Image (cartoon, rainbow, N blue to C red; front, side):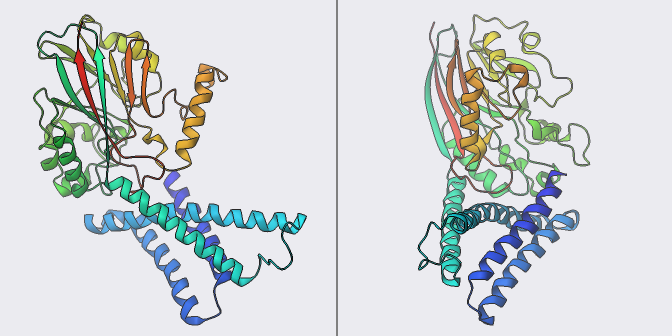
Length: 397
């Protein structure tokens, strides 16, 4: 339903609004207005071909259609906002006569200049956003855990979340991610949920497992489930998770614990969407808290659970830090409201997070919520970063 709403509202109504505002400023020349009209028609045709015939398209065709459709969605949203600002100024001027009569905002020339300026701004912002997507940032932190770890004194952990492998994040991009992860020379690799985007068909079509199988680390490569692992699009139950463990060679921790090198514990929690999800006290019942405990939990809704359970490091993803401006700003403001105590715990909506992005020391627990390596949807990071996290952990009692 949400995708259908976006298709109708964003792709039609916003496109028509942008088209009309541009038309008002264009010179009355057929060689200008005909290509201008054709561009909007072609885009909508491309989008709806991709939307309604996706089951019948080849992978390469669907990748192109998906990229074009999601790119246009971002373009229309930003252009609409800037053009609405212009309309607001026109309305205020009409009521209050703010500008001199010589400065005619309704003239064709004024409209054309503003429309072209908006176009340049949006294209520049999107270009920068696409560059940020293709150039992930490596965030490196040094942490000290004051616990006994007999055989491992120093540990280099590489953390990635929200890879979203599929039609948009294709094999070429996954290969780049794997190269980036392996460049960090990890001792341990942790993939904290939403490794797969929407369906597993695209992974089989690309033989995506060949890239994931290149992930190697002395203490292993572990993963947990995210909400996207539980999106079922005509697939067998848990087929994505089966693919991750049996095809991609990852050790998927599903409400389970593993003791590594007889030195520290790694706990992997199921995503909130899992109907049989267990509580952390039950999962860690047999864990000796004298040893370091690292917890992977995709959605950062209740950080206190990991703190109360005695986790030394708690790792999360899911938020993407909003992915696009102003979502990141909204998340930051809602986090301040969340932490102020104004809203009661029971009344807090799921889009509000205590920590939407970054590091926080909560009690004795090192908490990190990553912005995510990949993306859900359009390949643009506007106001946010694609992030790979490297934790240099020193165990010292």
